[in-house]
Each structure stands twice: as C-alpha cells, then as structure tokens.
Amino acid sequence: MNTPDIASPDFPSPDSPHIPVLLSEVVAALSPRDGGVYIDGTFGAGGYTKALLEAADCKVWAIDRDPDALARGATLVERFPGRLHLIAGRFGDMAKLLAEHGVRNVDGIALDIGVSSMQIDDRARGFSFLRDGPLDMRMERAGRSAADVVNTLPEKDLAEIILTFGEEKHARRVARAIVKARVERPFSRTLHLADVIRAEVRRAHDGIDPATRTFQALRIYVNDELGELDRGLRSAEFLLRAGGMLAVVSFHSLEDRIVKTFMRTRSAEAARPSRHMPASAVKGAAPTFRLVTKRPTVPGDDEIARNPRSRSARLRVAERTDATALASVDGGLA
Ligand SMILES: C[S@@+](CC[C@H](N)C(=O)[O-])C[C@H]1O[C@@H](n2cnc3c(N)ncnc32)[C@H](O)[C@@H]1O
Image (spheres, rainbow, N blue to C red):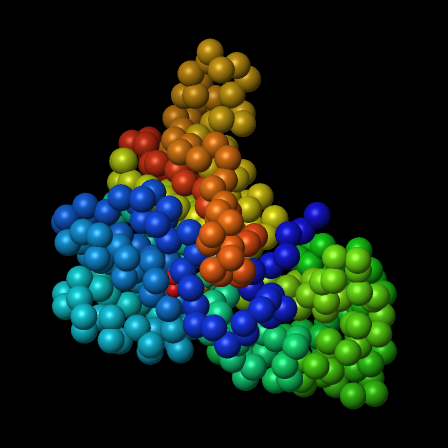
C-alpha cells in the first residue's frame, strides 16, 4: 500500500514555506567536517545545504533541476562566500556535473526526493489538484508536460503509468475516462483532470482525495523520478570516497523500495546466503557500501506535528567502502 505522498497537494497549510524534513538526522548522518566536500542533490529551499554549511567549514555543491529553486538560492551563496556552488541539472547526472567543475570525489551526499512545498503551493506549476492551474508538473519547466501526456498517450499506456507510479487500483477506469474526456475537450487545467478522476473513483474511507494517486503517477512519469533516483544512487556510488556517507530521504513506497534495494544489494546484506559468509564472497564483488540504517529513520511525533508533510518520510543511510564502484554512470565516467 502506498503511503500518502508528502508531495501531494492535499496536506494542510498549503501556503507554508518548505520546512526541511529529518534535518538534524540528515546532518548527523553526513557529519560534515572542516575541509569536507558535500553534495546536496536536491537543493530546494536550501534547508540541508544551509545546515551543512553551518555545521562545519565545508564546501557544498548544491544541485536542483528547478530554475526557480536555484534563483532563490543566490542569497545563500552570498552568505557563504566561496563555500556554496549551485548547479542547474539533475542529480542523476551529478558525477558528470561535478566532473565539469573538476570534482571527482566527495565526503557526503544528501538526496531529499520529490517536490518542494514551493513547487506544490505554486498553482502555476500545476502539481495541485486542489487549486486550479495549468496541467504542467515539470520541475525543470522544460520537456513534456502532464497535459501533453494525458492528451496524447494511448489509453493502455496511461493505465500502465497510473497503475505503476500511482498504485491506483482503478487505473484502467481512470485512463478510459481521461481518453473519453479529452475527445470533447483536451486537458489544460489541473481541476479539469481532477474532476474527471473524481467522477470515476469514489473517495476512500481514509479520506484521501481520489485524484492523489493519478496526480502522483503523472508527476513521477513527467519528471522520470524513479529513473533519476536509480541514476542518482549509481552516481553517488561513483562519487563518494571511502568513508563517505549517502543519506536519502524518500516519501513513498516506490522510491523507498529503490533506495532500500540499492543499499542492501550494494552492501550485500540481502544476497549473503549466511551471515558467517563474508560479504565479499557474494557474486565475487566486494560491497561498495555498509548499511548504517538497517531500518529507515522516520520523523518523530513532534516533527510530524510541526510539519505534517514530513509524515511519510523515510531516511536511509549507507557508508561508502573502498571497493570499486560496481556500475558505470551515464556520461562515460567509468
Ligand atoms: C523536497 S525538495 C528538497 C528540499 C531541501 N532538502 C530543503 O531542505 O530545502 C526537492 C527538490 O529537489 C528537486 N529535484 C527533484 N528531483 C531532482 C533531480 N532529479 N535532480 C535535481 N533536483 C531535483 C526539486 O526541484 C526540489 O526543489
């Protein structure tokens, strides 16, 4: 069962600024040191970046694919002269992006997957099914929008996307309704789509808006979020030096499964047939990570009370070993 997505626009206080999730836990996981070099792969409102820069006299390379987020980060760059560098791009490309700046190894990487409160709350970005806006959902403001997807994809493909990325059990019915409605009037607004979904799927006992899962699915598809996560984890393996820490916060089961599987496989925890057998014996490759969090860290009641959007967050942490990275990363770096 999918947990409610933090990035869904159905949480309270829609106009709140972004509050960093599991902040002290992420900083503790990276435990920044003077002279260290860190990557914040999801800069957002700069919550993690600022905390890392305050915790030690270190450098942070902060990446975001959203040009609005980077524009807002300019004041933080001024506040930490020579210590913060903002990069426009995707964390899936971080090995290549950092290599362009001559950086090949780092001491820690934080990823806070999903969308920020600013993105959700700005109706013009088209993530909200509660407030009308253009049906956009592109974090990068480039490429195929959600409207392009629902107006052009065959019914079968739409159903597949809604089922896989939204875990919506009525995916086929929703896809059929979308295809029928777009013949009369192509979709261009969020509320048009939300109304079509609501007419098809009844509100469940848990009170979650029936549009939640389909909007989540479209957002993940439009931004290739799971592909990015996969590439991001492999890039992290490539970039982290021995002893370097990887901390990933995710907000729904699809993402958490990818992070869990990656960390378990790379630390050989899952594959090891016997706990007496050394991990290095598994598949002939030495583990590239050591699991730090066997179970994910979740926000406490206090944090959830302060920030309801944190309630489905899960933090997983792993430490890089000195073994050679198992996978090459896109961009011909390995
Ligand atoms: C949850 S917010 C991060 C908030 C941040 N940790 C803070 O404390 O302010 C996620 C941010 O990551 C960005 N993002 C999502 N996927 C990305 C990707 N593949 N590459 C780069 N940035 C991404 C989004 O644009 C958004 O600004």
